[in-house]
Amino acid sequence: MRGIILLIVVVVCSSSVFIQTQEQQQPIKSVVVLVLENRSFDHMVGWMKKSLNPSINGVTGKECNSANKQKIVCFSDDAEYVDPDPGHSFEAVQQQVFGSGSLPSMSGFVEQALSMSQNLSETVMKGFRPENVPIYTTLVSEFAVFDRWFSSIPGPTQPNRLFVYSATSHGSTSHVKKQLATGYPQQTIFDSLHSNGLDFGVYFQNIPTTLFYRNMRKLKYIFKFHQYDLKFKKDARNGKLPSLTVIEPRYFDLKGLPANDDHPSHDVAHGQKLVKEVYETLRASPQWNETLLVITYDEHGGFYDHVQTPYVNVPNPDGNTGPAPYFFKFDRLGVRVPTIMVSPWIKKGTVISKPRGPTPDSEFEHSSIPATIKKIFNLSSNFLTHRDAWAGTFEQVVGELTSPRTDCPEVLPDVAPLRRTETNENRGLSEFQGEVVQLAAVLNGDHFLSNFPAEMGKKMNVKEAHEYVRGAVSRFIRASKEAIKLGADQSAIVDMRSSLTTRSSFHN
Ligand SMILES: *[C@@H]1O[C@H](CO)[C@@H](O)[C@H](O)[C@H]1NC(C)=O
Ligand SMILES: *[C@@H]1O[C@H](CO)[C@@H](O)[C@H](O)[C@H]1NC(C)=O
Ligand SMILES: *[C@@H]1O[C@H](CO)[C@@H](O)[C@H](O)[C@H]1NC(C)=O
Ligand SMILES: CC(=O)N[C@H]1CO[C@H](CO)[C@@H](O)[C@@H]1O
Image (cartoon, rainbow, N blue to C red; front, side, top):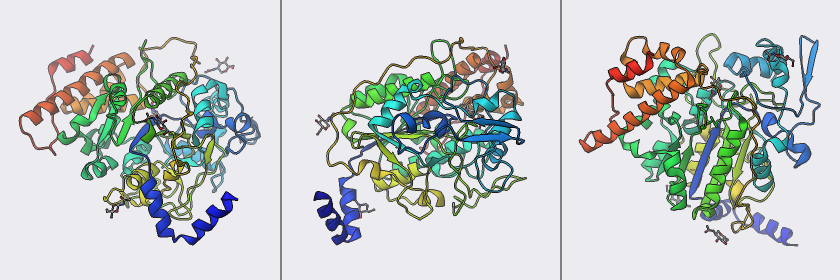
């Protein structure tokens, strides 16, 4: 009966009235974003279809890939600790998605993995049993999972991370070291928030990778960077979280301080613990009733996913194309990644698939984050690129209830480690860690030394790199704050002089 009346009301109201009422009811004042690393949807949450909620577009075990028509590997539920790292460069993803055909048949994962190592082909066809990712199992059953959210480009970490806050990678399809070091020039959602008088904060653990955007290095933003350990819980407890909170995981794996970014070879149990801590902190905050937490993954990390990647009418963000030989037009999305959203305004067990617009081909992808932030905070700034103008927005995830739930768990389950081996602080750096070290070298002024950045990552082990990065970030922040005291222009960026001490601490 009530359903029928509601339907009539909606039909009678003109659509503009309906949209306006929705905007006024928008309950969210604080968006918290946590981006983890390198895992596909099916790998992390695909098996939840079977045990948790049949309406999730997950796996059944009948999803198979073959290599050279000989070796056939089907999707299994025994994912464990993964080392080494499966392939996810632009070329590798192309092979995974298209196999040997011209449509995105998601059939080349096994073959691509085999080209790297024999054992990897099984690894990429495994997903976690829900009990091994207990935090996600709880959040998916309590809140919302998006089962049609794609990475923004079929390629690696950095370009995808850049899309999250700027809806473009400015033409990069790989890790362009020089550009990462000088900083990317495009506008970001941080700039939009700032020019609309709204606040944001980046709570980082080792180094804020949001400094890969050049604008973020400006003096005017230096007070937006906070050490996660010192400030996140405190600000949440005091109701002081800004309109947009970005949480950056630990990217270096140390004894007693394990990496929690979920990147192979890092143990996903630590990523689970980080999500648990962030959730419990927000749940206990006086801001809980106006908070939306978004958890997503930059890209799929080479792990299998069965959903075809969209390739029709995906707009190029800003006219940039990728480098030779592909000259990628940024007109296809990457592999599906897990996205989970949490808020007391979300109905228990929500599953969201395709967005409602703005165009019939719109999809959820990382640019949906700036697009939705613009919408819910009613920012007067333009869209950042054609891509966030096109991406689906997700404000409806908090638009169904008329009051916040009071039954959300206060504490999430405990997480047992999956990795049985010791942390190895002496191992060499991953490519990503090498780039983070280069960013640190720029902040520290060491990039002026000849050959320094290129050589650096090769010589350092994880422990040394962590120390170097930590030192560089704190010097940069300190120097920027000094410069403000001395009256430097707010749009200036501090240029550090290399110091002998940093040089010698690195050449051991
Ligand atoms: C591959 O798997 C086999 C059997 O599972 C194991 O004995 C071998 O050590 C593995 N090789 C590598 C490189 O991990
Ligand atoms: C959130 O809203 C619920 C329902 O109105 C209320 O019971 C609860 O005290 C509120 N919590 C906070 C932290 O304001
Ligand atoms: C959104 O901002 C516009 C001006 O940019 C204003 O006219 C409108 O009333 C605002 N809407 C809401 C719901 O605040
Ligand atoms: C944090 C991290 O190590 N991320 C990895 C994700 O995948 C890229 C390749 O696309 C690696 O370079 C990164 O190391």
